[in-house]
Length: 280
Ligand code: KIV
Image (cartoon, rainbow, N blue to C red; front, top):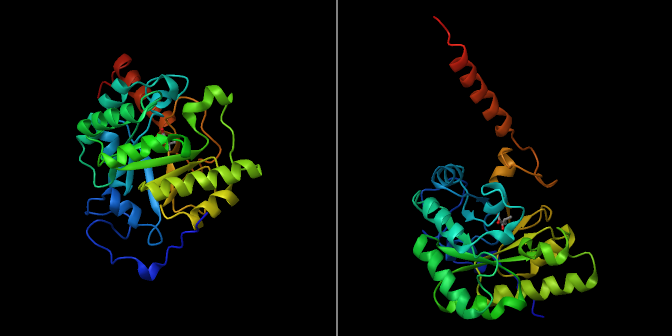
């Protein structure tokens, strides 16, 4: 397999397509996101509605993902496999109304990209709802779908490692890259996606050593979640970091807030004032 070396000197000068520094007034395009490789680390966050997209955009996220984590953290589903295209479209429309500077990407939900024809049709629907890129889970196994979406002119973000949409087949959320077989498969998948032209690749729960190697060898930026510190960027489910996710919060979420407890406190004070009005 060919190793892709990203020589900083060979990169084009920074243009209006990408930014240096956190918060930016410059719109990030899919090409601009990919061009950040080797220049600047990428902070990416999920968002599912209008105000949340405004907040993560103001926090400087260069990539804002309407993720299908929507299912668990907003819609009360047990996992992402129940999220439908209609769910995604509704939330992408809301997020897009915030007109973020960060690139607005949306997950193709479970079952929506089984064939290249489905993949392109559903990617077009997400774009019509306001997405600027789509994300799909898998590597060489979905390469025809990824290639077809890219040929339709829609940017794609890859997703390798632990694939939440496969949680039922896999019987849980497992770290990937521990065996030589998984390591080699991840390498081949990431190189294939990068060569196809994806804008970035999310690496979820990949062992840190393997994530580092993929980051060094892959021409597209890697964006880690629970995959160690050496990826080109990091992504988090925003509600995990804020402390409002209703369920289990993964171990890789560090320094999180507790806005759920804070919200309950504020609203309890309000309720108590309704029940026992202050007379002053
Ligand atoms: O759906 C999602 O939020 C995601 C992130 C965990 C990367 O895919």
